[in-house]
Amino acid sequence: MTFLDLTGQQSTDIRTKISGNISEHTFTVRSGEECLLDLPRFSGVSPKTVQVYAGIDAGSTQTRGAFVDLDYLNSLQELNSYDELFGTTYVVPSLFKDIPDNRSIPTKGAELWANMDSYISFDGSGTKFTRVTRGQKAIDVSLSNSKLMNSVAKVDNDSLYLNICDALGYGILQKYVTIPATVDLWISSSLPPEDFNDHGKNTFRGKMRSFKWKHLDYGITIQFKIRELYTFTEPEANVKGYYTVEREELPEEVLHIEGGGRNVSHEILHGGNSLSLACDSSMDAGSLLLDTLGQRYSEKRRSKVPSMDNLERSLIIGKLKQGAEWEDITDVIKESKDIVADQIFNNVMDKAFQRQHIVQPETLDVITFGGKLFDCGDYDYSITKRLMNRFSTVAPKTKFKRFTKNYIPWGLVLLMMGEQE
Ligand SMILES: Nc1ncnc2c1ncn2[C@@H]1O[C@H](COP(=O)(O)OP(=O)(O)OP(=O)(O)O)[C@@H](O)[C@H]1O
Ligand SMILES: [Mg+2]
Image (cartoon, rainbow, N blue to C red; front, side):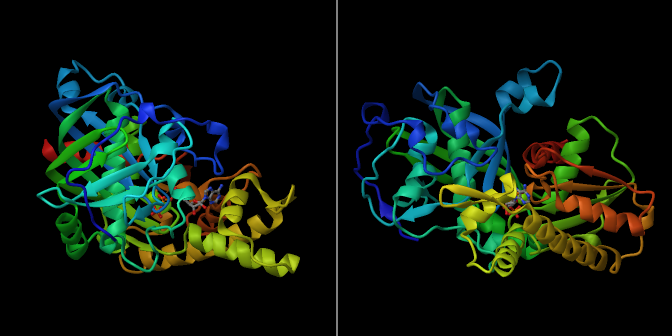
């Protein structure tokens, strides 16, 4: 990563420079990122300080942030709905390119997606910055992508911290009409179970420090001051978020499986407490599904392995782009999903129930599923279909629930508020 010295650099107002049109996008945003296609709504900056609770789910494909302004929270007479408390969950793509210099990257539109070019500094004197582009600018610049690599623990990966900083920066940029100069932050962040140990938590605390966030084109500088930092596992945040927000009673024995791009994590909650010996993650996740799909496709159709972008889109629409035509590949997708489902089943059975004997499959009230790996796609087939079949052989009286939205960011804020009481 290269550090840039911004001393003396002038900021320019983007609104005098931009031109272009949304239809020029070469890549559509992923679901959840739609608000990046809006125009920035801020009207100015102010020297004021705001105090914010932030719940951050830093996934390998997207980083999602929920924000609660403390003045707003304190002004509430009663809580009518969690939608009202949290409002929008702001999402940035986790894939970025860090730019080693101050080159100019032309803007292709007025929307935020076309203008994601920020400078992040953890350096107290605020002179050493890392320049980070996402969205259209990351597509346009010819450098290689940075992402949360599977081979490195999430907490050891510097990309994680840049993703969190940008989720906070762009989140505040979209939440406030007048952008504050300083944000006092209470952060609650999720970690995969494999990082949820003393080493992982200490590493996270050491690296996730107060920072300065600049958007030069918008003329914005925000100082983020971290007041407190909390961590929870992704499964716990999703399950407790779901049961709180949907106002359902948390059952006595819950097994949650979270399927993302990088990890499949599982955790058992017994009377609301996590059984640490039944909490783990594996790599049988989206990247394995995409690899399996590519291999199966190439074997069955005797052709080369399609690109990852093409395969990823096919998981959503069931079709692979072949020149000007679309090939229906739902047969290969279903086979690949079944292969990954069997691996997840074997792995969870092995790791969740062999190391502890307090909760066994047949006594579980419910198995819950979260994460996009378990989505159906337009062809209406999901990994959970096979997983439910497999689990019902060992847990015939257990119910199943697939979360249709991500409760992690809201769950994180709620868990943090619970710890503060
Ligand atoms: N319809 C679908 N069927 C199966 N997989 C899908 C579908 N849609 C998206 N995916 C896959 O889901 C993965 C992304 O899931 P999700 O957004 O939950 O992960 P994440 O939270 O960003 O990552 P992680 O938590 O593992 O770090 C990607 O690998 C993507 O290809
Ligand atoms: Mg995730």
